[in-house]
Length: 364
Ligand SMILES: Nc1nc2c(ncn2[C@@H]2O[C@H](COP(=O)(O)OP(=O)(O)OP(=O)(O)O)[C@@H](O)[C@H]2O)c(=O)[nH]1
Ligand SMILES: [Zn+2]
Image (cartoon, rainbow, N blue to C red; front, top):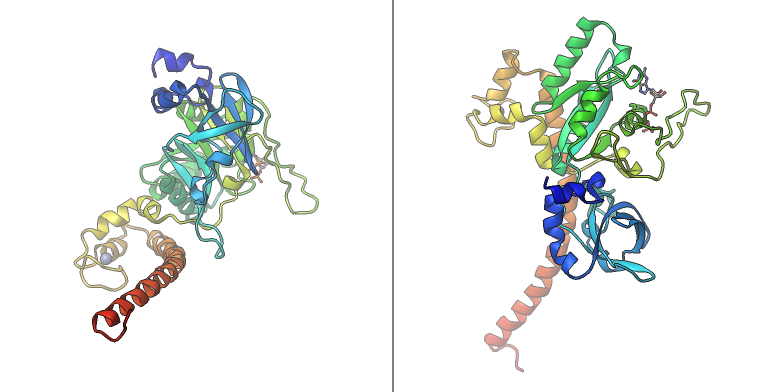
């Protein structure tokens, strides 16, 4: 980072040389840079060099739901006025998109410009590898680098058990750093803080995984409300505060939005491939290029399973996520196909009409 970018008052919020370069044309128009901290209907809260600003988003709310303002966006804002308007959004480096339920399959943007994703999974006697793979797929799909944090490591004090669990996690997450952390004991927190110091980090993980506790440890203060252990009605309390984007004590920025936390079904096509990199690599050796790795002769994937080089669970998980993903894509495609059909019909009618005119069956 250049000295100018480091000295910039938004440096704590992730401002860097790339931001400065992208923002230059807006600076010439007298606009102010800001990072979106929170979005609600028609407005957003930003941090700017002059402090927090609330701005109207009417100019940056196109029909495409993937292009609406979201937490983490860099924006160009009016220098004054009441209300002040967001005039433009800088191009996103990465984006978290959720495939929404069947009625609106367009997808919904959850967070922008995330560099790393912490996938928080409690270190327990039995790691939920399938869940890890699912979160990894989402992380890879966003364009950010995943980081697997095994939380509550104090719960597995036995070093032998722990190293087995770590080995399982590492095998499940090729290309991903795996870090055991205990926020309770402070173990591994400094390592994690150093890893996330360089950019913007988001938190993924199921409820109770220890995300808020981890966030507080990284923030160096209790900003997030930690789930009460005594949960009388069994429903769990909604714990995340409305402060969605926060600078970390050791450098870097944390994005922790409720929408991102509670992930459901996502469209993670290329992401799934990255999670199972070793399977995709094996698949390249299969005799048939469209091998489904079910019962085909010369299947390198099945051979690897037979030889014990690839856990059968891994292949099952891969198939399951691929199937799920195809399902989502098919749903989206159905809508696309319906749209195309309408277009073709209209074009077809025109075409038929033109043909009939040519053939002299219709007179003008
Ligand atoms: N033993 C142990 N318990 C922990 C640790 N970190 C968190 N916990 C406990 O795990 C429970 C859940 O922690 P939270 O931080 O609220 O989990 P969360 O992922 O933010 O949960 P949601 O807000 O529901 O998404 C709390 O009772 C914490 O005290 C740890 O390092 N060790
Ligand atoms: Zn095969």
